[in-house]
Amino acid sequence: MRAVVADDHPLFREAVRLRLDRQFPGAVVKEASTFDELLAGHRDAAEPVDLILIDLHMPGMASDAFERVIREFPRSAVVLMSGVARPEDVRNAVRAGARGFLPKTMPPEAFAAALSIVLGGGTYVPAELVNVPQAAPEAKEGGPFGVAMSALTPREQQVLAKLATGAQNKEIGRDLGLAEVTVKLHVRQILKKIGARNRSEAASIATRAGLI
Image (cartoon, rainbow, N blue to C red; front, side, top):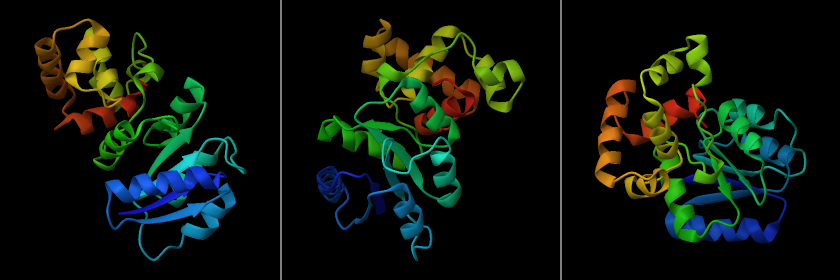
C-alpha cells in the first residue's frame, strides 16, 4: 500500500505514518507539508498512490483543492482530515470525489476501521456530520442515483445514510431507535432496491446521490 500524508504539522504526519505502518506493514508512506508540494512531488510517482490523507487547512488549500487533487490522482482514495471542519465543507469535499472525512481526534481503532472502509471502496463520514434530507437532491433532477434513492422509504434513507458513515448494524439501531434485526432487514431491502452488491457499494451510491 502506498500513501501520502499531506499536513503542515510534522508531528501529526509522523503520528499518522506510525498508524499506517501498524495497520499496513510494509506500506510506503510519503509526506507533503503544502498543497503545492503534494501536487508537484507525487503526481508523477512511478507507482500509483492508493491513499491520500489531506488536511483541510494545509497551506495552499483553495476552494477547488479537492477537485484538483482528484483530477491529478484519479486512482487514489482521497480523504479529508481536520481538527475542525464544518459539515458543509465535508459534504462539498465528498461531492467533489473525496472518500470521506477523518477527524484528527479519532482513536486508533476507529481510524483503522475508517481506512478499511475507504480502501474497500466505501466512504467514511462520522455519524454526527451526516445530514439526511427529505429527498436526495438528484432524485428531484432524475439523475441515476436519485432514481435509486427515490425507491427508498424515508426510514431506509436514514439507515443508508448511517451505513455510509461506516456504522455497523448495532450502531445504526442505537442511533435510530431500531432493533438490530430490523436494521438487517432494512439493509437487505436497501441493497436490493438500489442494486448494490455490498455495504461499501451502497455507501458509494449514497454519497453520489447526496445523502451526506
